[in-house]
Length: 317
Image 1 (cartoon, rainbow, N blue to C red):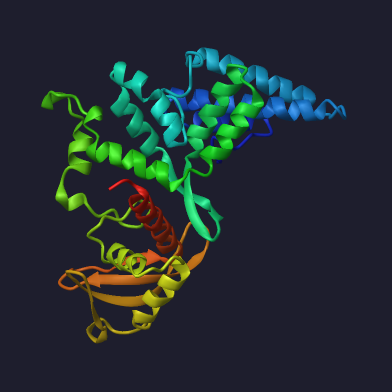
Image 2 (spheres, rainbow, N blue to C red; image 1 turned 90 degrees about the vertical axis):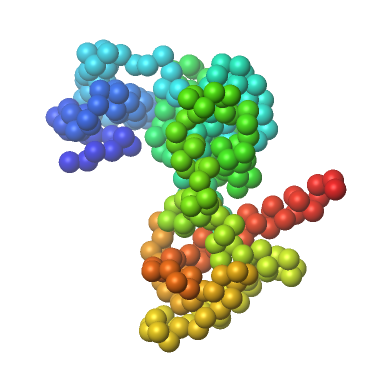
């Protein structure tokens, strides 16, 4: 059975079965609303050629609308917080959310719903809002009868979120005291645990949003940029050339020094969200396990670090 909020069923029985496969009434309502939207689009296309399945489509739409009423009806808005995709729009709304006491929740909503994109730009993966947020944004847009061009622009930006915005949200959660209430008992525990503790400085490259400053790979990238390197592919080649061959036994690996870290490097392949990619396995001396960074993740890290270095060099001293 297909349990997907993007799958539009082709029979009434299938619509019933898929709807019942979701565990909560809110998920069922969302799926039914998305299905109605998809069926209405299909009906609009069919009306130009009087397709034979129009009667079935109308029956399914009516069924879905009735089910939504039985389940309690649609929410007033699907998204709890405004969806923004850049620092400029964030700053325009920040004051209002702060006054309402919802700034921390809003930042966490934005940050937690951004994921690594399956779409490559210049050979490097970027960031995007996840499918559920995009579906709910579309439902809000349709139900409020908003301008299609406005939503299309939002959708385009939400599918290609800039590193700068992800970094900005990350900094808000780590350092911006505006987000935190003055009383310790009101401080959100996930912020205290996830961002305040030293042991969480390193975010590994299995879908997390950054790799901390203590990572040897980050140190290598920073050193390459300091030496004047501007092309991430060239830096990758240098790192790859330093690494031992894929099948080199652990006891025969070469020890390299990255700042205060002694590190073993070995070439590897890693399955990414899109394909099998070249990667580097690395192990800090004394650590029990290897960690892996793919070529495309390395490129994303390098571009982000390069952008930060340029921003810092342009800022007034």
